[in-house]
Length: 365
Image (cartoon, rainbow, N blue to C red; front, top):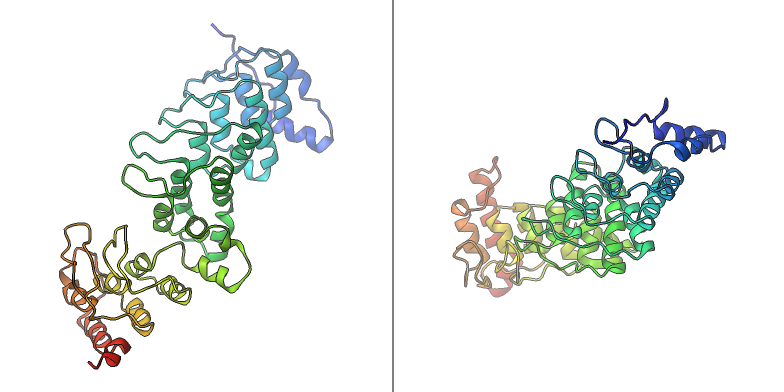
C-alpha cells in the first residue's frame, strides 16, 4: 500500500508562484526527497499535483526520480489528463502548460488513457479549448487521434461545440474568446492534417456545429479559411456571415448574415446541395421560416419568388419543383418552428413583398 502523501504547507501552485516572485527555486529540494509513490486521499501522487500546478521543473525532477507518468488516481485521471482539462488559472500562464505537457510526454506520458467519460487527453483539451496542449503536441510530433464514441465527433467537432459558451457575448469579445478555438483548429488542420469536412455520426461537420453554436470566428474560418483573418472589407463581410450558407442564414432569420452573404455574392438563387435546407433556395428557406427581413433582402437582390427551383428536401417535405411563393403559402403548416410573435399582418406583408418582387416585375407579373 502506498504511503500517505503530505504535499507540505503550500499547495504546489502557491509554492511555484512564490518562487517566481522571489526569483528562487526553494520548492525544488522538496521534490527531490518526497516519495514518488505516495498517494493522498484521492489516490493522487506528487507528480499529479505538480503537473496540475503547471510546475514543469518539479515534474521533471519527479520523473527523473522514477515517478510513474501514467499513474491514475481514484478519478481515473493521469497527470496528463488533469493538465489537458486546463487547470483553473492556465490562461494566465499558457507557456507553463505547454512546457508541462512537453515534459510529461518526454517522460513517457501516454495519450491513450481515458477519463470516466471516455475522453482521452486530446479530447479533454479540445473540449476545454486548451490551446497550449496542442502546441506541445505539435512540438513533440505527437499526432492526436480518436473519435468520441457515440457522437463520432473528431477533435474539430469538440472544439466547435465548445464555442457555444460564447454565444451571448458581444461581437468583439466573442471573437477574442474564440481565438483559442481557432488556434487549436489551425494546428489540427494545418499541422496534423485533420479534415475540416469530416462528419460525425449524425453527418455534421465541425462547421455545421460551429454555425449552430453561433460562432463569430471559428465557423467563418472553417468555411472560408485564412481569408477571414485579413483586414479588407471582404474579410469583414466573411466574418459577418458566421460561416453560414445563405440558406442557413435565412432559416435562422439572421438579416446581418444574409446581407453579408448577398454582398459577397454567396447567396445565389439556387437550391442547397446539402444540409438541413437541402433542396431549398435561400428565398425558399426564408419563406419556410417566415423570415420577413431576410426575404426582403433576397428579393431586392433579385431572387425570383415564382421560379420553381426547389429540389428534393430532407424530412419528407414536399418541395421539389416548387417556388418560394408556394413555400410562403405553406409556411403556416411547415415543420419549421415559426416566430412566436408572428401575426397575420406579417404574413400579408411577406406575401405582398413576394408579389411586388423586382424579378416578377421584370417578368411582367
